[in-house]
Image (cartoon, rainbow, N blue to C red; front, side, top):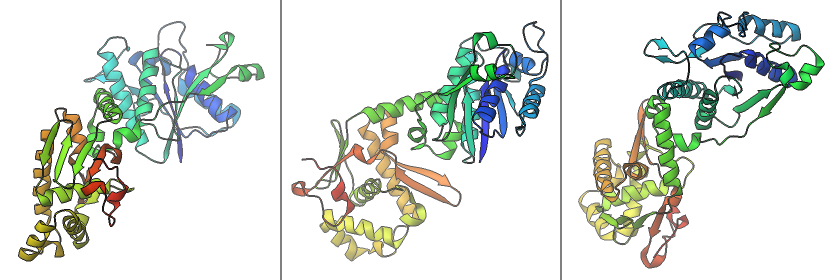
Length: 381
């Protein structure tokens, strides 16, 4: 496990060493690596090269080493280069500050990209400190962690007394130690909502601004109490005042994937879909709800013995999705209820993103079948 300290820093890089002291010395948490999100001027301050009288003239790296030597703690990985000092760029020009509307788009995009990348490694635990830099920079770091943070990642704030501010890089007396406080800030973790219906490619390619819009749409869908109605008697699927009717095999396939949403792993691989077992499960749905069609198909073409071939399934999926699109005015709703695909190495998985509680099943005489998992679903007249 790797513990990573992430700070935003402007003209007071002392925040970084104070945070390292609080975690390593006060809380006995070994920090393995340090990253700093800053601006071009912030980078010069970290390097000890800023010309202003009130900014430090000793490189931060030196102060980190001094702290580690004094308190005999392991030195975290930190180099004064672009690997550990993250500066937002507009094209090839590094941002000098974060003040304008444009800069407040570029900086959070870079911050989100960094946090997203670091949280993609399950071995990393992030300790994100929002005490330094401009307030907007702290907000952007907190928002990025809210979007991508996992259970063990922490959002922190470090604070010392007024008389100790800017006095040094870390406590050297007992009084200074007592004045330095590190507090953990609770935050809402949206990661599961964000990742539930995104492919890996989509997740990696979206910018912060796109994630904000995407997350807002997902929350809107979650709070919407309307449901998809699946009528097993008429093979109709309805949403609001719109209704479509699927062909028997199309209906059975969509019903099967809705039923699959009750399971821990709702995704079906193409290997599973083209297996005889999957074909048999579709046959059972047809027997249950559309017996006349099943008997006719069984006599003419017992396709279910071998199961679907990949091309046949993909064709049916395309037709199902085309019809489902007629139900929704909002593209975001369609995305939730369509049969989505996610290409992974050597295979493709298929699933419906919408959660199970977004569907209501209408059964004949309001009685669910006794032999399937569908009986666990909500029933409506």
